[in-house]
Structures are given as C-alpha cells and as structure tokens.
Length: 256
Length: 255
Image (cartoon, rainbow over all chains, first blue to last red; front, top):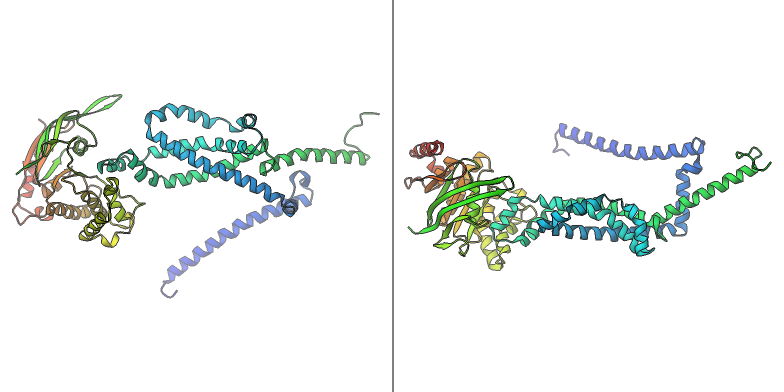
C-alpha cells in the first residue's frame, strides 16, 4: 500500500465505504420489508389469511420441501423453460438469418411477424390444448409462441444494421453472402444475441407458467392455479365454520 | 511504360424510387504499371463509386474497365481494396484479421501463414499478432489493414481515403509509411482522397474530378527530384506549393 499516495488511498477508502453502504442498504430493504410484513400480520393489521406472512410462507416451503414436491414442480418448470428457451434461440436466429438473406422474404413476412408478435398468446393457449392435448408439448409450444416472434423481429433488426462497409470489405476480398454471414454477421451479433437471450429466458418462463395454468400435472404454474382454486374453498369453509360457531353470525339466517 | 488499367467512357447512376442520380459521366483514364495514381474531387462527387467499379463490387452501366487489356469482369487479376476505416474485426486477433482475405478465398495454409508472419514482422506488428485490434494505435491498425490487403498479392491496390479516419499527425506518418511500402513493392495503386496535399505528396499523376456527376477535369503530372522520394520529404520540396496551387485552381474552376 505504501506505493499509493494519500489522495489515492483516501479515494479507495471512500469507494470501499460507498460499496459497503450500497450492499448494506440492499439487504436492509429486504429485511425491513419482510419484518414489516410479518409484524403487520402478527398485529392483525392485515389479514394473514389473505396476505399470508413470511413465516407462513417459509413453513409452507419447508413442508413442501419435506416431501420433495416443491423440487419436482420447480424441476418441471425449469426443464420446460430451458427447452423452450433453446428452441426460441435456435428458431429466432435461423429465421432472422433467413429474413436477412432475402429482402423479398423479409418484406413479405414482416406484417405477419408483427401481427403474430402482438397476438395475446395467453388467449391462444386454450386452443393449443385442444390441438395438441394436455401435455408438456403444449406447454413448450405455448412458451415458444410467447417469445419467438419478438425474438425474430429484434434479431432481424439487429442483423440489418450490420456495418455496410464491413460487408464491402468482405466483397472486396472476394467473399460471397455466405462469407458475410459467417465472418461478419454472426460474430458481430454475439452481444445482440446474448441480450436477446436475457429477454427470452424471462418470456419463456412467463409462457411456461401460462401453459401450466391451463394444462399441467406438475410445475409452478400448476401449483399456483391449484392453490388459487383451493384457496376460496378453504376460505369459504372457514368462514362458514365461524358463522356457525359464533352466536352473532355475519350471515343473516335464511330460515327463521 | 505498360498500361495496367484502362478506363473507357465509364458511366454509372444510382437508382432510387425518387429518381436517378448520375454519379459518373464519361470517365476515361489510363493507369501505368507501377504507377501511383491519385484521384481528387469535391466531396460527394462519386469517387468511392469509381473505386467500387474498379474493384468489381458493382458493374459499369456503360463503358469498360480493362485490366492488362482484359475486361475487369473476366480478368483474374487480383485487386486489393483498402477502405476508409480499417474495419479490423474486434473478435479476431491481428493475425487472424490479416488472414481474412486468404481465408475467404480458401488459400490460408501453413505456407501462407508463414508469409503473413513475415509481413507482420517487416511492418513491425509481429509483437501484436495475438493482440486484439483494440490494443493497437490508429497507425498500426491501418498497417494491419494494408497487410490484409497485400496478403492477397494484388496487382492493383485501390485506396479509398485510407488515412482520413486518423488524426493529423498519425495521418502524415501513416501516409508516409504506407505509400513507401507500396512503392517498394512496386504495386500499381489508385488513391482516392479529398486532401490535395496528400495527393501531391504520394502520387505520380493526379486526376481531378468535377462535382457530381463526376467528369474528368484534368490529369496533372507530379514529379519531384530523387531526394524527395518520401511523402514527408515531398512536402518540403520547393515545387510542392506550386503543384498545390495548380491543383486548387483546377478544382475550383467551373467549366
């Protein structure tokens, strides 16, 4: 450290303090929010039955982890997400290259792509079940359909922005369109493809959950829909139970 | 001296939906073997179009380009093209960048690699053969781009303002550097530039183009004594400013 000047040391110390503050604040926010939630639930400021509480969620998780069911559901969803993610990347890159390769093709297909991309895919999901049955294939197709069209459009736009001078360079060296593709387009598009992948992994998860809402025997989406369907029953049962037990019923008696 | 490149009544227009823009009108000139030929003209006059035609990236609408007496399209003569910017690919090492042309033409083998390494050594880049382009200075990058072009052993070199992207000091040095390399290799070169002093400092003859559509205004012979053999030395020659004024006048007058 003796090689550093006083001002440099001061600067480094300041930077270190800043970084420390940032990470402490980050953790603090999470802890505070969880504590506030728990506190409100304990003090009955919010109804812990509807809003739950961190401790309840943790217990529920432990319970599901105990019988291993949560890992099955996470695993199924993860698998479906990854499969659809790779399909989207492969289909997206190949289709975008095809569109880049042929001006006519891209101009012909453009309105269809925009339309397909803006189509609400969750509305399409029930149809997919009818067409392909209640299975994992349906879920993967649903997830792919959510992400693939946007991916093609983004990649195609990126491909079209390849520096025309770099294409000229390849041509001046005697290269063909294929050389442009392999030597310039693909290598220069790696950052674009990676950023597109980041968007797609989220979209695929959304697609998988939508698919699992409608047709699944396992997975996180299935779990959510299962819980939300069971929840009102329990709620009603408990309410009814309370109504019977309490003398001051909240429901007016129908039969006098 | 033998004629290397013949351009006869060359015409070229760009077509858009809005209409037709004539870029070149009836251009004719000859370039001798081993000559350094410069083309100057006002910006946007169609200089780069001329090079694209000479390179064969686009074909002429009218007129003809002959290399060694054979039409450009049928000729097997190798023509090297250096663009305004070096366009070294950041995802390739310097060695792999200079091998790009050979790779595209499927001529990259062990022997070619040895030759490339020798060239990198000659031009002071051997230390950087595994470096990325980003680690090189502007001048070194331009030299790497020249090696990429020379690797294909071109008979004719086309230079499209290859120094214009550099800062002034580097530009003088690189211009000196590169034109000396081209001269020692005895290549025929066509340099396009808008910098008059650059044209005078490197060329044997300077062709002046008019504004768009480009026509040949005149061709000026430039000759200096043997002691002014390098571009930087030429700039100090007593004739330099006289040539400059003549060229400037030629460029300014409207016919």
